[in-house]
Image (cartoon, rainbow, N blue to C red; front, side):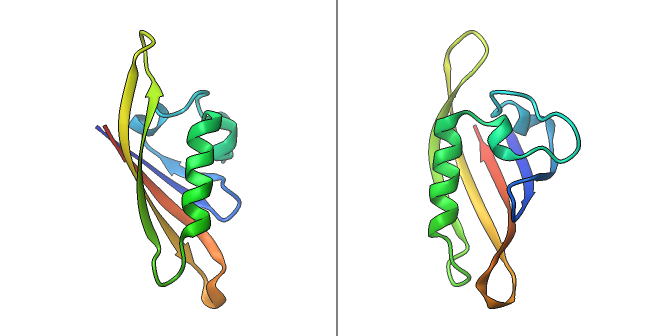
Length: 100
């Protein structure tokens, strides 16, 4: 299964598919919710740390993490985050793909 999410520079979800909602501790609610309102603390920390290391020269990185699924068992994901940078190197948002 492949979860996909696109987000803006402020971490607001622009678009996501249903499979991405499985990663979320709380389902995205309302218009353009923020990632940190949906994801558990550890997954959000991994995403922030990954984004902080990305540069215009190296805009893609991956990490492996688990999420507690239905029935309280762990589901492992390989997540890849690709950052989009504006002129001058400022983060402009990105895309997150998570594959179980």
